[in-house]
Each structure stands twice: as C-alpha cells, then as structure tokens.
Image 1 (cartoon, one colour):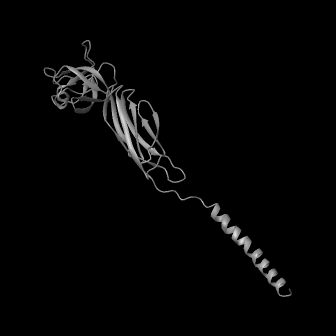
Image 2 (cartoon, rainbow, N blue to C red):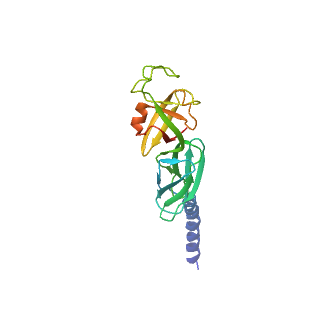
Image 3 (tube, helix red, strand yellow):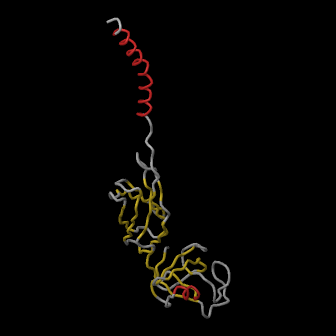
Length: 217
C-alpha cells in the first residue's frame, strides 16, 4: 500500500498538469474559422438585342458546384435583381422580360457562405429596343445647315428627330445590322415617322429608305 499511494498521487498530478494544455488545444481547434474556397461564376445571355417586352434567358455556372444562391443584377433604365438557386452541379438559369427600352449591363454574383468566397462574373450587355417608323434624307440637301449645327454632307452620320436633345446617341438596328449615331437635326414631319436617317446612316444600316427600325430611344 505504501508504494501504491505515491503512484496514484503522481498520476493525478500529471493528469491535472496536462489538462489545461489539452483543454486549450481543444478550444483553439473548436474556434478555428473554416477556410473558404475561392469560387468562380460565369454568366451568358441568350440575346444581346431584344424588342421591349421580349424574353431574355440568363444562364451560367458557379464553381465549385453545389446548390447555392446567385444574384443577377441588371443595371440600366430600370434596376432589377434576380435571385436564383443553382442546381447541385452549380448551373443556373432564369428568364427576364426586357422592360424599359435602353442599354443594360448584367452581372452575376456568387454569394459567399461557409464553404466558398463570393465572386462575380464579367458584365454582359444587351439593348432593349422598340420599333420606330423611319425614312431618310440627304440628296438635294447637301451643303445645307442642320438644326444642331454643322453642314449636311454625303458622308454625314446621324439622324433627325423632333424631340431628342441634339447630340443624343441613338442606337439603331435593322435586319442584323447595327449603328449608333447622334441626333443632328429636326424632323421628320411625316405622320408615323420618328426618325430621318442621313443617307450615310441608311447605307451603313442597309435600310431601304422607308420602314421600321429598332431604336433604343
């Protein structure tokens, strides 16, 4: 018994001396912040040119894969945020109805969580157009002044409009061709027509002379 009691006391002393260090080690392990993995998100749009009211499909993928939230922010004439839940493989898809006419920038944000850090995609651009009646002018008027200043020449690019401020950049589209030109003059003054294209603008756009064009104003 004389030998057993000292041995038990020594064991207890060792146990008591080691326990604070062990507890501290376990506590440090318990409170260690999880390491987030770097993520990556891509974004694509089905169409970069659409008539107002038309549907646009936005789709993309988040890596690493997994079911998580993505926000697609649309900045333009109106600002919208689409909140989308990805599939387990990281892909996402949603439809957006092009509302107000104008130019939009779309960007996807992969939200951070316990596993991944947040990320964002490249900005994708699209234009929502409306149909506008148009004609053209130029022959017989070259050398004359225009309402916004300057002289009308065969190579002048621009449009006439009755209300848009001089210098407003108007994006026009016709059968796949696109051009952006300034408002340089006033007109047209024919019922049903909103734009008069200069001859050079007409040629660049492949516009026949009278009809409807897609316009972002």
